[in-house]
Length: 306
Picture 1: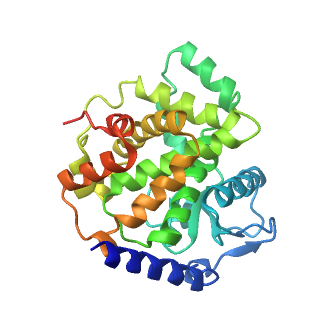
Picture 2: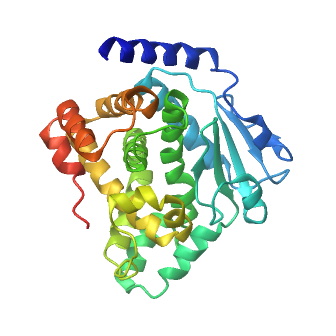
């Protein structure tokens, strides 16, 4: 079994090297306008002259250098900025503006005022004045939540691209994918010269976790997250609750283990891929997690919601 695993992993790594330049699905670029704004990755937009994307590109540009160093890669990928009107044509799930990473080298981000940010902004209009004051400090006088949904969460999706490049579309659990994405998001944000991006993601999710909008959610277990993933994703609010739980766990993990946990976690996702390890039951998977990362890690990722 061990020799078979080593052989399969070696074969997968060689295969990845061969597809470095052609793993991007270019059919997703049809009808889009290419933007010459960086040499680090490809940029496309649904509008010929998109506005207000330079800061997003600069953030991704800086974060790519961080991820390339952490994972010893020089990843090729494309970022698609899509307005709400064209969202369903290029993204795989609503609502418009929710960042998404495809298995084949493309990331989709919102363009202009996104639906997901607008909905969130409307949801906090009745929040207490101290909450408004806190959010204005981090998101500006108008509380522009696209600074979270487009910019901050782009780090999460970029992390997924580094994962998918090595694992493809197969994974042992979706919740492991999302925990990894949040780890990447936290690590990249903390690597920036300014704490502004990290503070935005931390403050907003802390505020949301204390609100009443999540009191009566339908889904809260990991088994539901696996079995009803796309239903939860399209519901938006329930998906946000899950991501917030993953974020706070990722924050603790990064505080404890630092950047080294990112590469270790990605290697674990590669090694436990169903293509390599077969389908693992929960007990076996939990045992492997504890053996690989230790009790401190295991206790942090334990799920208390039933």
